[in-house]
Structures are given as structure tokens and as C-alpha cells.
Length: 298
Image (cartoon, rainbow, N blue to C red; front, side, top):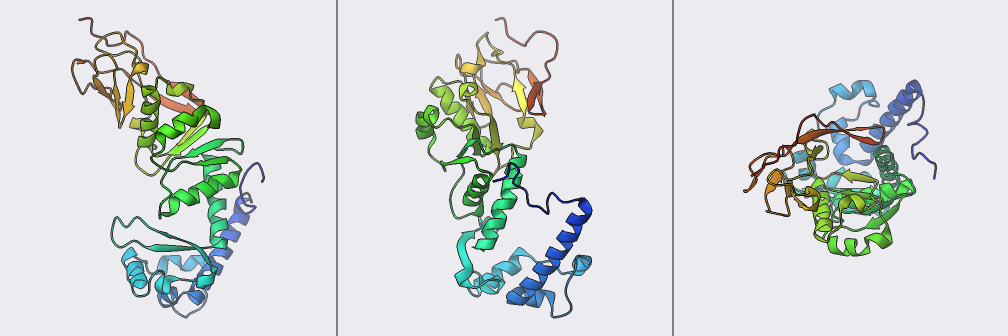
């Protein structure tokens, strides 16, 4: 595929892109009103709906969608394509109520891959990468859809899923991954598992970490660098263990909070120095202050 996985309309001049968006939205609204009983009632039988009419349209709530599907599972009156055209079914997590079914036609699948590919290309994934997909391949949309989107870029996908940490580390030097796609907490878990085997995470050869699925990746407090020496004694913390938001010194097992460097267990009493991290043009920049590191001399 092309070096950049973007559609022609996405690369168009702003004025042309707006005209394309207005036309496609009007076509989509016309289609769902014709094909879906739910949206036909919602949008009425009047003239075509345009972008200018959006502000006057009624909101659609999740409770409405649940009721429409419950009356005739799996899709109910929301369905806007014949059953024979639906090639995949996912469901939402159901954390706020009854899960919603989501049907994909082949055209939906192609659009999903194209949009997802553009997003992951923007995140830095390229065709020559080997990507470990370490998220759940369950009923929800993300696992498989994200996999296929990254594959659409041309990258080599390794469908790890969950619960495969030891197996992946066993095969690491054979697979030679350059990107890990996971939750922030799993990335920490994987780093800790590597350290437990005596393998420094920095030597794993990863070029990029792409995270999602839980808070953390976009929270500035999680993007910190800590001093590399324990504040209790002069012991290298790169020999320690990373677990869910903490760093454990391997000498006396004092834990430190990754967000602020505060000690959580004795014998350490002094916090670690924390340095802001900035990523600019693919470079990781760490702002290191002046003065000695806080280390107890006792």
C-alpha cells in the first residue's frame, strides 16, 4: 500500500474536504433513514437532512438503542443492512447496562481499517514494524479492529492477546518486535517480567510503545523519569522491578511511587528525584536539575 495510509479526501485541500464531508454526511443520513426503521422514526419523513440541520436533530441515547435491540436481538430496528451483508458481530463492554451489538458489513470493515490505519500511522507505526498486539481479542470491537487497522498499514502483526507474557519473552529474540500495543499497566508488567529474567527493558529493541484501553498513556504524571539510584543506599534501580505504578528496589525491597517518587515502604525514607519528560521530533528529552541526588548516607 501507499507510504501514507490516507484516503484522497483526507489529503484534499480544506475547502474540498468540507464539501466531501457535507456530501457524504447527507448521503449517510438519507441511507439510514431509508434502511433503518429506528432512524426513520428518529429523522422523520421530511426532506433530506443536511449538515445545517444537525443542531435541530434529537439526541439518540444509549438507552434508546438498548431498547430497540432488546425488542428483536441481536440488532433490532437499528439494523440498516440485510443480515446476509453483515460479516462480523461485536458487542460493547456492557459496563453501563445491557451490551449493544455492533454489526459490520464489508464496507464498514474497509472504512474501519482505513480510519484506524491513519490513526496508528499518526501514532508512529510503519510498514516495516513488527507489532505485538497485547490487548484482548474478545467480543469488543477494539481487539480485532485495531489488529486489522495496523495490518492495513503493512506492519507485521503478532496476535498475542493476553496471558502470554512468558511465551513472548521466550520468543522475543526470534520475533524481534519493534512496537508493543497494550494497556499502560501491561507495558509496566511486561517490563517487570523482563527485569525478573535479568533483561533490562531498554535492551529489548523496542522502537515504539502504543497504549490504550485504560487511563495513563495521556496523563503527564505517567511520563516521568526517576533517578536511577535508590534513595536509601547507592543501589542501581535499573535492577529493580516495575509493577502497577511502582518501582521496587531489588536490594531492600522499598517501593517508590512512579508518579512522584515518594517511598511507599521502609527502609527508604527519602523520595526519588523526578524529572519531566518531553518527546519532540521522535527524541525523548529529560530535564535534569542541578544538585546532588537525594541519597541517605546512613
